[in-house]
Image (cartoon, rainbow, N blue to C red; front, side, top):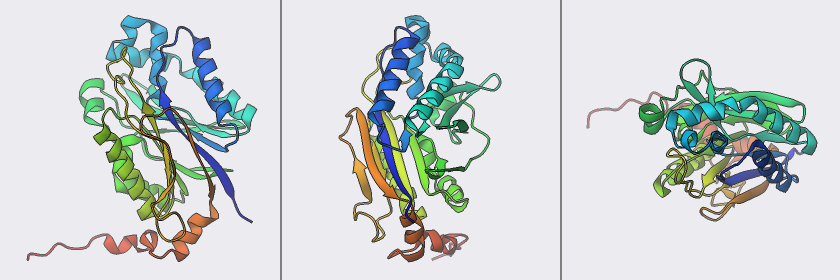
Length: 290
């Protein structure tokens, strides 16, 4: 029996929101537009548009904007839980700050038809997150065993570190979700290359969901470049390019693909190359003097 999953990756633009109702209407419409899908993935820091609810001064201040977005966390969770139940789907909500002390983490929360499933915090901070925002790293990785597959989340920069994706794949992940937020084309390509490499070496599906477009009222998310895409290993059982679906550069909207998860296991067992199985042969190889 095959396990068919319809996946949607968002290329998500920021909007100024005059009130909570505007945000709720926007997210409700976005989820409805992907109502034909089983798994919806929103981007890294997409929640930062909620800083606009605090007004221009707060939205334009790096630290104040973090606190304003975190303050909306419970209401945002409730909205996503309700939409996941209404549409019978799983949603990785756009990540945002969550405070567990003086410093925030960058947290993405997963919801299913029965409610909140859990969260994943970013593991490796970029220079901006370390030096300007003072974002703290999360406490380890999580594997989510769901009706739409065994999911792992590697948030943006995390996707550029092979051992994180490898740990999730070895734990059983079939799909890696990569919500991203990059302000340059080079930054987008770093995440894209990382995501495609994780698909190749782990022989799994990887979903990249970026923020796109300008945002002139918050210095952390002022420029956003990228394209949504869904990747697979080019191992003879998937498209030769490794691209299942992709959108246009900087174009808002959903990118969708239908995936047979049984093919992940087939790739790892019978692909033309077997990087997932042969990974241990690359570990601990000595470097000898020439």
